[in-house]
Length: 269
Ligand code: APR
Image 1 (tube, rainbow, N blue to C red):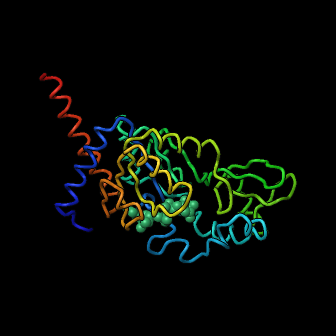
Image 2 (cartoon, rainbow, N blue to C red):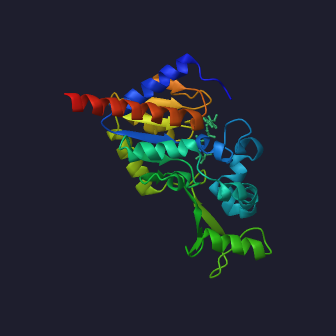
C-alpha cells in the first residue's frame, strides 16, 4: 500500500474544502473506480483493451458483422462484473451525495456499483450491462433471461425468441450514439457545476472526456483522483495520483470534519 505523503494529505484537505464550499459539486467516474471491486479497466495496467482490440470487440460495426466476438469478451468479463460489489470509493461518493455535498454522479461505468453503494442520482452515459435488447424487433430482455439462454444455448451469441436476431446489452459500443437523456443531463450538470470530482477515468473518450471543459468554462474547479496522469491534470486545481478506494474515503472524512466545525461555529455565533 503506497504510503500517503504529506503532500497528498494536503491535497485531500484542499479537495474537501473545495467540495464543502462548492455551490454545485458533481462527480464524474470511470472504470478506475471499479478496479478495486475486481472489474478490469480499459486503459490502465492490464486493461481490457490491452488484450482485446476495441475495434474488433467493442465496436458496433464489428458487432453487427460478427456478434460472437463481443460475446466472447462478454463471457470472459461477465462473471466478475455480475458478482462485483461496491468498494470504499463507491460508498464515499454515495455518502457525499447523502450529505448533499455532491448532487449527482455521471458515470462511464456499466456495472451499477454506484447504485449498489447507495448513490441515487446516477447518469449512466455508456449504458448498463443489466439490460439487453434485440437488434431486430427491439424486444427487451433481463440479465437473468440472457444468462439462462447462454447456459442452455448451443450458439455463443444469444438470439431473440421472437425474431431470431442477435441480442445486444444496453452498453454503448464505439460508433454508437450515447443515450440522449443521460448525455443531455450530464452536459447540463457540467455547465452548472462549480466543482467536478473526477475519479478513475483516463479522460480519453469523447464526448464524456469534454465534460470537465464545461466546468472550466465558467471558472469551475476540477479535482482529479486517478492513479495515472490525465491530459487535464494541468487544468485541475487538485490532482491526486492514488487509488480512489483510498483517497475518496479520506476526502469524505475531511468533508465531515469541516462540516462539523462549520456547524460548531454557527452554533457559537
Ligand atoms: N484508483 C485510481 N485510478 C485507477 C484505479 C484506482 N483503483 N484503477 C485504475 N485507475 C485508472 C487507470 O490508470 C486509468 O487511467 O483509471 C483510469 C481508467 O481509465 P479507462 O480504463 O480508460 O476507463 P474510462 O476512463 O472509464 O474509459 C472510458 O472508454 O472503452 C471505453 O466505454 C469504455 O466507458 C469506457 C470509456
